[in-house]
Image (cartoon, rainbow, N blue to C red; front, side, top):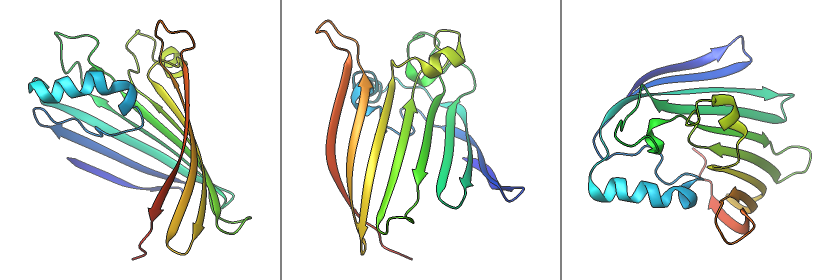
Length: 182
């Protein structure tokens, strides 16, 4: 991997990378779309048939009024990774957008809204795929920090079409983390 990053006009942060991905390596294997992509991801790793490729990563972010942080990351390959399998998700860009409310007005509280989307461009319409719910996960997190510990209440919405009826899967949970300041 090679890349560079910085700040533009003291408003935007950016990062660009050139990625040289080896055989059977999947960047960001355990991402927000893991549960809906597991049936596709695991066989690629298990069978040892995921070819190496050259890809890219780009990130752009900004802070709004010292209270919100907005960050968009997009990664993908240069060309099709697996030409024999048009549906291989490694052939297409992946987007992750995050809008965060920083801790501030309510001491100890912060929030995150995350949109994670795979298979951008599979239909030939990049923007259409961006808003198509299939292959997307939307997560809302409410975080409470006390000392180094953070407890988060999260909700995830996924669109998983199947024959059982309602394709919308909504899950919720609690997450804990410890932040070690350096």
